[in-house]
Length: 82
Image 1 (cartoon, rainbow, N blue to C red):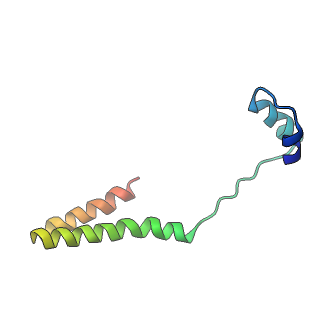
Image 2 (spheres, one colour):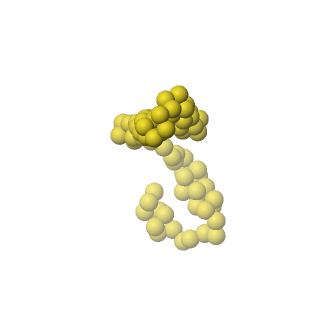
Image 3 (cartoon, rainbow, N blue to C red):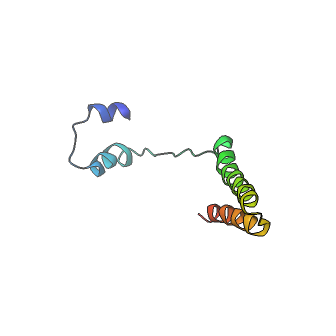
């Protein structure tokens, strides 16, 4: 199929190419999606570590434990809501 794409005369629209090379010849497109453990670990651990650091920093700076961990929980909740 790539050979056909390279050798075919360029048409005005992409739709014509898709129809002529894929649909008319009964080809199909397969999307392969997978999980990446590294990406999931980073995506989950970054907000948790950030909220923990903000909570500790705010607690040490002001001495207000309740507000510090309220701010930390807002960070994790805000990131999880996307």
